[in-house]
Length: 143
Image (tube, rainbow, N blue to C red; front, top):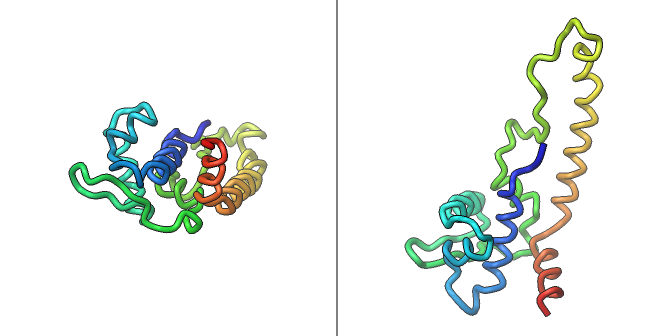
């Protein structure tokens, strides 16, 4: 299982917006060229980020801007805005383990609590990291 690339693309897009906003109009076409994907993908992501209150998007070729201070946007905010996690659950369990098998009958009892703990740990780490932290790292590398 792998988390989709939507999350890393969203972070990439937000860092690009912040990096280039003073020098040029940051459009979906520009962002798509940095990410190296179709602009339609970027437009969809920007709409998800807009709905979550993370970006502001001007119609037409107006460009995008970040709606809140970077220190107030966590990686968990971004993750929740763009990832489609069903019922808030990261791990999707197979539907019908065989109840006649001792492992199949008990697999939920064996794994459910551990998987919940793993998800909580991941979300805590994402919550503890702000977009400002990522931007600071970006600035150090770009100098």
